[in-house]
Amino acid sequence: VITALFSFAVDMGYLKSNPVAGLTRRKPSREQGEHATDETVRYLTPYQLSILYGVIKKDVRLSALVRLLHTSGARIAEVLALNLDDIDFKAQKFQVVGKGNKQRWCFYSEVALKSLNHYIEYYRHPKHPALFTAQQPKTLEVSRLSYRMAHKSWIKLIRDSPELQEIRIHDLRHTFATERVGLMGIEELRALMGHESIQTTLRYQKVTSQRAEVVAQLALKNLPNFSE
Image: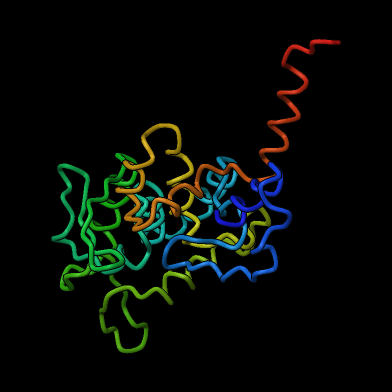
């Protein structure tokens, strides 16, 4: 901001040169929602989502997990930390403890509810409190599903789909936010995402330099052209 202010002063003739032009910019702080570029976050397109939901049908547990992540916007670590008793099935919501030890409500869809109920009824181990459980193949010990195991199942199912290469589980959270931009206020989206900084939420507006150029060129073609 200061650099731009001094540049404006130079343009207006108040200064001969910009006194801070040679200063090195500090590195962005990810903790504060700052980023080195204005590139958009990675998210799944409707076409990729259709492919994803097709391939994960083979794994009932992963299918329930993916639908819950996609429709709630929760972080994978937040969902894996949930117990069965944390889920309000009637209101289709659950509360998580996010970054900064802050609590927030997450809401999920009717389709996610059906997928979750199917997993709980037929595949979840009832003697463990965790929502998503896992059983060791050798010892048969039941435990909470770990991120490592969830990620292993994810990679195994998407590896044969070229359209899903390099797609991460965390991109489901980005997809949730991207789908809701324009449907709600940015502060509302920020609350659902649990962002500390509004700048982090604003990234989902996807107004990058490349996108801005496309819009600008389109406007120049469509706006009235008044000749001299």
